[in-house]
Length: 89
Image (cartoon, rainbow, N blue to C red; front, side):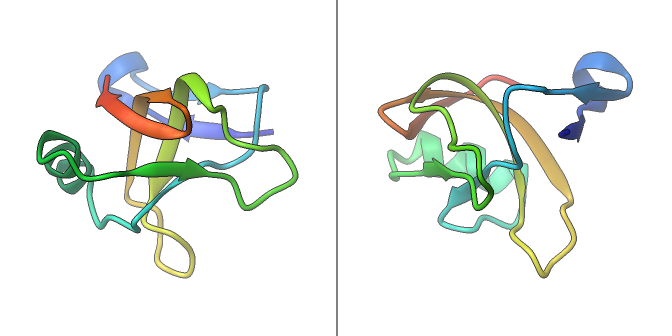
């Protein structure tokens, strides 16, 4: 099970049964850094280190930074071909 904290959208924790924890590469320190990277045209890809692959197309829920740092940000992103094209929330 995957529980993702998204207070700006739902006011609480959401359950996402479709997959495992999903991250972005490069390993960005904040959601603001993710938004800046996308706005600058940088290539930001999604990946899942667990048994369930990240979506190649559609909406995905990502978090960061990667382990061993504590996860401090969460985002809903739009993905095309495994590359983040938009930060939705």
